[in-house]
Amino acid sequence: MGLMEFDKLPINTLVGADWKTFKAVTADKTIDKGFRNKYYLTKSVCRLLSLLQPLEDARYRKIADKPLEMDPVFILGHWRSGTTFVHNVFSCDKHFGYNTTYQTVFPNLMLWGQPFFKKNMSFLMPDKRPTDNMELKVDLPQEEEFALANMMPYTYYNFWFFPKHMLEYCDRYLLFDNTTEYELKVFKETFLKLVKISLWNTHGSQFLSKNPPHTGRVKTLLEMFPNAKFIYLKRNPYTVFESTRSFFTNTIQPLRLQDITNEQIESNLIEVYRRLFYKFEEQKGLIPEGNLVEVKFEDFEQDAFAMTEDIYRKLNLPGFESSKAEIEKYLGKKKGYKKNQYKYDDRTIQIVEENWGMALKEWGYSL
Image (cartoon, rainbow, N blue to C red; front, side, top):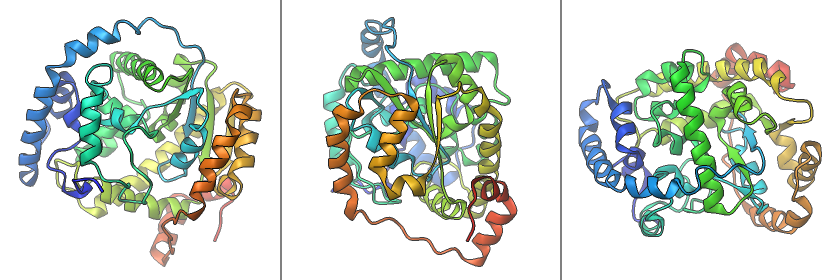
């Protein structure tokens, strides 16, 4: 049991940002009255930790020019589409490297000071993700967006801190519709840096990404990694709506620095889902033949081992034979895992059918 409860954290994840990023993310933003103590404490600790940045930068220069052995594998899909489970299954293959939970908060303290800060984080953090009881440990695989949010100001996850700007961040940094060439350049450089540090940290030869925001960035990712492989997860939109609403309204509480109602969060997530769905459909044709597999999460969940083997085969990925024992072991441990159960009320059904009908039709879901 971690010392801190997730919803009572006195600081937010910006504590691990470099000072330049912290200043850029918070510049000209309103900090609402009830969050000023959290803001000032986060700012103070961030400023203190940023004094160590030159040590980190010096060590990164030693690996910065090392070329990637293989282009990454990207697990895509809207939040709550099963990406975490699939990520955990594939990360049983030790040829994959990945971003860790520690790295999501302290991406600028990876090459210097990690043992000390990781030990303290492990002591303080909760043992389970509060929204769905998934296990939380400092070295477990985790999505990259929180890490990127602490390395540069051009990420969608700025909305967790400033939710009043959620749709603005969606257009600029989730879909890259209104971003500048400079912002794109910084994104590419920063993401490549994260990939290289992740591979160094986990001793992998191919980066395994699980990051829902990347679903809207296929074009940019292909510019960086022309032979990247993509796994796109689809899930029952009724379930995704209920689960995402719960996830966002709970996760945002200890992170936000602005007031926002649950009704506003719900309205925003409805719109973001639509924009993300259409952006992926628009860009998936850019992926070279044989480099994309689309999977219904319900099918994967039904027989995860067979589906994993099938995905390896279709994407021509190395490592399945040497990893299948570890994959089976992991899946065996998850047999008793209790998922949240959702009952779709009339309002949920109406919202999904009126706003996400395109996904219901395209993917063949119905009640």
